[in-house]
Image 1 (cartoon, rainbow, N blue to C red):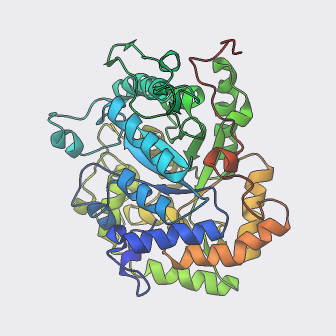
Image 2: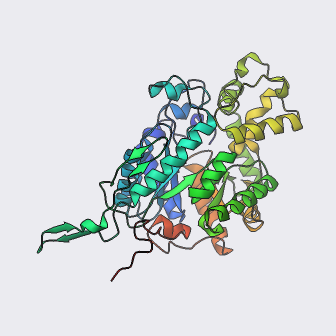
Image 3: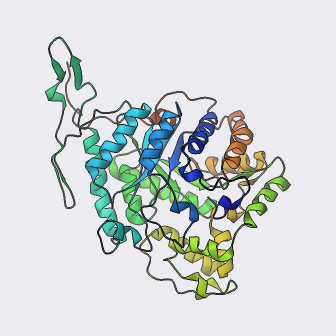
Length: 430
């Protein structure tokens, strides 16, 4: 999570398509007893954006490879509800859940595409509007979760003596009919050991919060400060009751990009090393994707950012609104934008000694600004290894983090119950 980290001497620029390097990262995270290794995605390239986005594996294929190289850690992948079909996606993630022994997660995205390039790759002339995408997403998730329940847990009998391969009374057709989808079912793969893959979501807009409160089990957020994070935490958790859910059925994870040093001086030296690699206008290309695809190249770096003309945003609306508010309140200049808003460039409390980083994490957790963290390391594998070796032991000693895995599935790691099959609810069994 740093626009210039690929240029660092310790970085491997082709790591995004080096499966052994990616498997090593998952293994390091597993050594640190992490819940989940998570893979982001995009469905189009923008030559003006982050260079590492240009060259990457399909995330479902990648997490299958990560599953084969690990034993306990969960594996999550991003997949779009706007540019997929529910049946195909349900089958893919259920397959990975079986391959991994119940460790899979699906990060539900509606696809934030400021340029509209993705639409052109899928036979559409333009990207759908924000609220339209979320309407479709609501149906999409319902269909996928319904298909995951196609088979009761003991439907496949494999009885060689009677010749019964499965119990026909324990397989169910979905017969879903909505505005966007008509899906008969059943899915042609058994229910997994954890019942269903874990649902992750990152939307913070009003429609995004509704979708999360109704369907998500993990929500990934990224707020500028602890007070804004607390406010979002309370607001989202309070909506769960509307859908008959309790607060412990959804975990909110705050995104951080820690840089750790044996001393505070060493940590900032690592930070400054990365900052020196940034080309100001290249970094603004990255910012552009979150600010309506603005052409920052026509502005000098000392131009007041509030003078920039920002077009209507059809991508990550909540993040755009937050950034726009900060620009106006802090009177930022164009040249300040990347370092103010993104990752380790923010130079926040998550850069410092192991104790300082652990203290900051404990503060956010104990003050109920977050249930945990989605960690986006600026430089891999260095920052991941430093965190596992230096910060994790402190969190373990304080009783804030597990000493070892206590189960085998991702739901075990997250303390989430196995979902009851919708077709067996209220069903009387002998």
